[in-house]
Length: 249
Image 1 (cartoon, rainbow, N blue to C red):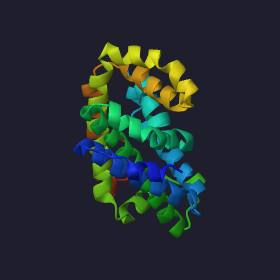
Image 2 (image 1 turned 120 degrees about the vertical axis):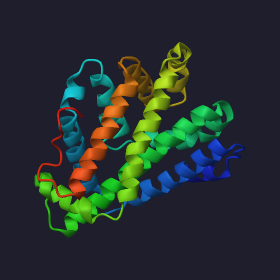
Image 3 (image 1 turned 90 degrees about the vertical axis):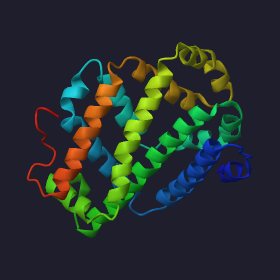
């Protein structure tokens, strides 16, 4: 809908150009996904994987210092439901983003877009792999998932996905420690509603609030990355219980 606005916006820094390119790629992928016959299956894959993440990291998910942040990760950053309106609004305000935001924030925003794009691309590829094998996703077993995972041609992208979670998480944590950001979000609620950007504003405010409440974010990110790298290794090595991890991880 707003692709032309993304394309014609004048960008003057590497970070702005990076964000512009990623938003164009993400816009095009969203159109491709919306018309894809496996669209509904991608949501089922995402729901299955979100539940798997909750189970694998159940101790962190139930921890009062981490729960809100992890819930934001699973429901907003890795959302089984569509975020079309939010994403359209990002495209719509892109000219203002590159005009008013500093480069470091544009770089973080680019990381978020890339993470979202990669995650949705991998979900679609996984849905295609499962359907090719005649697997009903609603009743998918761990073994079904692992077989499709091992057949994937996207292993490098899966490694990139894990590293992006760590990188973006660390950057977001630095920003939310700045109380000025919270003040700005509060002050801009009214203008955001008037500009029909309340959904985007709500997403940003939820993320800010979630990260503000989290304890020892660096330690959490380290554990998440270590665990997910181990899960990936377990799957590729044919471990009989790939999602069950040692207590020390």
